Length: 179
Image (cartoon, rainbow, N blue to C red; front, side, top):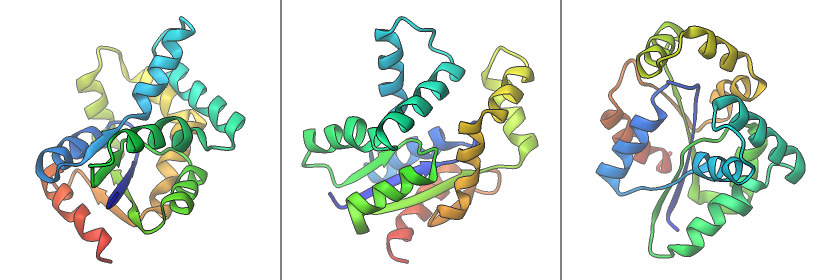
């Protein structure tokens, strides 16, 4: 493994768009924590909504001292594809998750935090969701989302998707391994 990029940021900040640009331009292979959580909820026949995903992630954090993301999501993906040099974990949400990835994978890890101004986040969320902003506001208040928003201080670099396109950010992200 040459690179492992951890993405963080608020919901609707543009993580998915930056991820797609990294995949297209630089052949990053995604590791999806969301897919893992959705599959886990489906086995328990629980509704697949943001609140349940947040609660499940928090529960796994407590049960595993935050190691589930490495042990159950990242390691299986990485071991299944030893040919891949550029990995991308779509969303870290807690400082301890970032810390554990850095301890486990060392210099291969970089952490990019994706942001946008709050009015832009609200507008993007409203544009992609049929629900009103009450759901957005409830999700923003969840401790999991608050923690994700606080990760800018732990990141190697912070990128504003209101100032740069996802493709510009994808190109800049490669430079953080040279810092």
